[in-house]
Amino acid sequence: MLKTEILPATTGIPRAAQLLADGQLVAFPTETVYGLGADARNDHAVAGIFEAKSRPQFNPLIVHVHDLTAVEKIAEIPTAARALTVFWPSPLTLVLPRRVDSGLSDLVSAGLETVAIRIPEHPIARALLARFNGPIAAPSANPSGKISPTTADHVNEGLSGRIAAILDGGACEIGLESTIIGFTPKPTLLRAGGTPIEMIEKTLGQKLALPDNGNITAPGQLKSHYAPNAKLRLNAKKPENEAWLGFGADIHEAPSLNLSPSGNLREAAANLFAHLRKIDQIATNQSLNIAVAPIPMHGLGIAINDRLKRAAAPRNT
Ligand code: TXA
Ligand code: MG
Image (cartoon, rainbow, N blue to C red; front, side, top):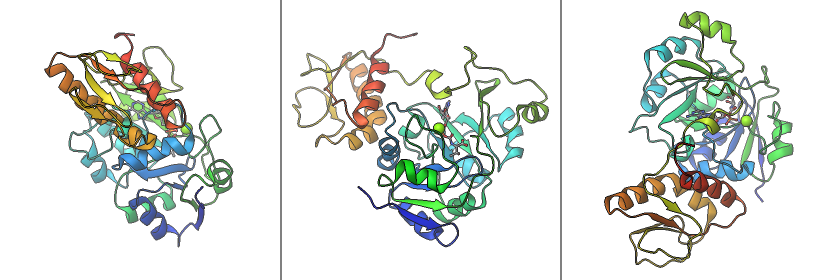
């Protein structure tokens, strides 16, 4: 158990920024809800978010940055999206194509080629971003399945002992998550939220599209996730003329990568998306399928297994 530090809003900012730089988790206020922040470039820190929330799935997270220059470092901005940047800073999140040189953790966008970005308006969030001087990944700071927190006390009730610190900025004004817009390429409403849809449509001069299945509750789950070319065989004891994605102490006779030689689930989560891509390249080049070692079904192992199951599922489903 960690001893969660409660940091006062203004004077606590240098400490909060330092903890983030050290790869620790810090909850902070935004105008919508409290976010559970981690350095968005640090795989291990981002894996910690899923661990602290006990999230059973790796859905992509929102990356918070200070200004438009910072957005341009990590994403491309299509023309329609460019028009909406006039709303920033505000409770608006844009899902944009990730730059190849973004430097972001693969886990942040759950292996997708896009990244959700928002420039928050809350002065404490802005001061933290300025001081940290880097992108902060942050989902709502609640345990998975619980209601989003709008006070530091809510965060403390749910996550005390699981995160390094909470920056106490009082109650959040809006209390509702940000509106999320995607561009695929039509401007599409992925989640209704703190920025009114009418305002967005007026600025765009057109109606927003809805996702294909009309469901706007859990966008990350609907998008096609990164799927390997090679076939995946899960819970394998050993490779049978296959490339091998190992976990824990391992045999190395096949072309192989290991998610965590020491059997550490957080390390495995941090490596998951990059290793999947790499082993897929190796397997595809050698016309092999991929066998994956069993991953224990507890803690982060649940989300890892969920992701592997999707990667192994028949295509076009
Ligand atoms: O107001 C908010 O947006 C708060 C504060 C902390 O900023 N954050 C928040 O994050 O609500 P979270 O992780 O609870 O919700 C992020 C949503 C999820 O539904 C996720 O699936 C979607 O954004 N999302 C993230 N990246 C995506 C992507 N590349 N494509 C589609 N959906 C994405
Ligand atoms: Mg949430």
